[in-house]
Length: 143
Ligand SMILES: Nc1nc2c(ncn2[C@@H]2O[C@H](COP(=O)(O)OP(=O)(O)O)[C@@H](O)[C@H]2O)c(=O)[nH]1
Ligand SMILES: [Mg+2]
Image (tube, rainbow, N blue to C red):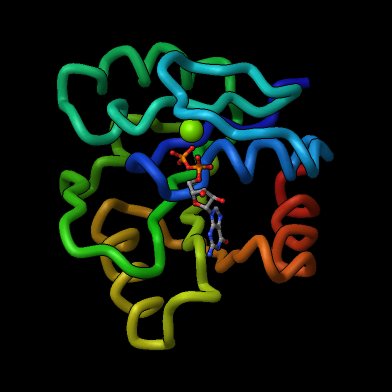
C-alpha cells in the first residue's frame, strides 16, 4: 500500500530516508533524477521543491499517497517554501521531517519548525541516520 511521498531540497536526505523506511539499510544512494518508487515510498528529485515548474507534476504524483513528507535539513541557509504551500494538497496528512539533527542544535531545529509551520505543516519530526530510534518513530507514524 502506498504510504508517503517525500519532498525536499537536494541533499536533505530523502533517498537515504526512503531506503531506511523500506528496510534497505545499506543501499547506495545516488543523485535522484526522476521520481523513484522505493517500496511504498515515493522519492522525488530535489528540483521538485526547488523549481516552481515541477509543483504541478508533484501535485499529480502526490494524489496517490495519503501522506506528504516535507524534509528540511537542520542546517540550511536558503530554502524557500511558498507560504501555506500545503493548501495545494487538501485531504492529506502533512508531516515535516527535520533531517540531520546530528549536525545541528536546538536553535537550528526551531528555525526548521518555523519554516514548516509557515508552509502549513503543524506535525514535525526530527531525525538523524545516527539515531535509529528517530527513524523507528517515524516508521511507526507512517505505517
Ligand atoms: N550527518 C547526516 N548526514 C545524512 C543524514 N541523512 C542523510 N545524510 C547524508 O546526506 C547526503 C545526501 O543524502 P540523500 O539521501 O542523497 O539526499 P537527497 O538528495 O535528498 O535524496 C548523503 O551523503 C547522506 O549520507 C543524517 O541524518 N545525518
Ligand atoms: Mg535523492
